Length: 416
Image 1 (cartoon, rainbow, N blue to C red):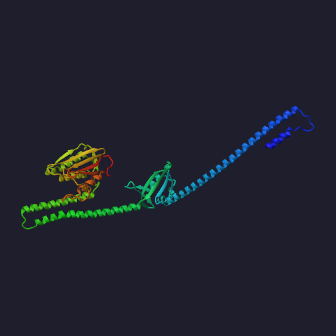
Image 2 (spheres, one colour):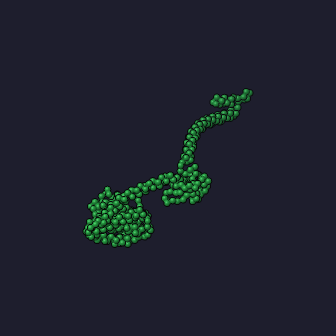
Image 3 (tube, helix red, strand yellow):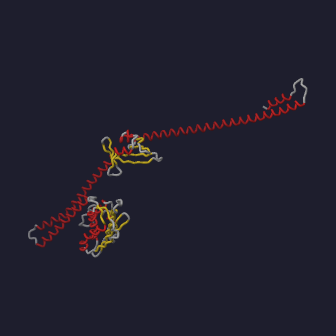
């Protein structure tokens, strides 16, 4: 480029042959050569800048091309992973033994897996889920279980309804628990049979002793030459054994009838305690015991079978009379604690050992030789039938306190 510029300047500086030298023309030629030289310099500089910019642009394009290739490769890898994950999830949904139903925000069934299709039919897509439930699902006594009709067969299912994280709808998971339900019923049936057999064996043992005693006393009455006073004594003893048998049978029937056999009604606790105190008064006098009453929380009522609840309270008072020594006292109190009422019976006996307290409510378990072992079991059944529970507090040497914890009318059940 510099050579070309020099050659151009040399050509412009020559004077044509045969032309006379002129000063003004020479001056103008020198000025034009300077302008042309400047123009060439500007052109060369601009060309160099364009060439540098082009090379830089090429490098930038190449870098972007490389970055795009890497990004495309990563996207293809992620797409392949998501496609594989989607395929696995689809396979899992199709092989899942539970039914899966997708419902949109309007409550319309969108999709379902094969198991749900067998349960409800594949034609439920596009139908409101509430209509499907009304037509094919019925409630049972167990709030966690539902009854599903499938081709004329009734199945037991569990429903789990979960909202989608984005709020676009929800997923309903249906578990068929019919087999487990049947196994549970069979297990409960076997347990009942086992308990019935054990109960029959214990009852036979309980009946045998007083019956044998009664038979012995009656046999003595048949002996020749029995004196009149012996006849009276044998008759009283036989009658006492027969009455014991009658009480055992009555307790057994009350225990078998168990929970909720009577009509529930509002029961005023003040009246209930007053009636129980009157019922137990003769036994208190015979044992020379005093009854201390605390009715500070008795101004409320509970929903219960009045006769059964009063019998349970009297049974606790009878136990307290039998456990307390003469010339001592029994404390009967009613306290209100929020939504529950507590009826407590505290005796003055020797207390109950901790290892025995857990077994007191077992049928036929008793610490007395003449007890039936059903009284406290009946108390527990009666109290739990109205949504309550029984608690015991005892320290050896300081007596025992039995507490009936009952929900006040209108309060929720407290059975644990």
